[in-house]
Length: 50
Image (cartoon, rainbow, N blue to C red; front, side, top):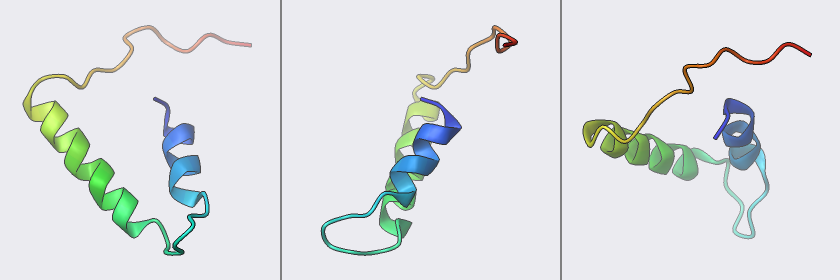
């Protein structure tokens, strides 16, 4: 999951309105849990140059 994908999900309109704050809070909680379980990792390979 890239930063761009997270930003797009937070900015996408919802059927119930809102500004994405609830989704942001949920994502922070999810990643905090995954990090505590040592499930969060970053790709060690540098991005490919175009």
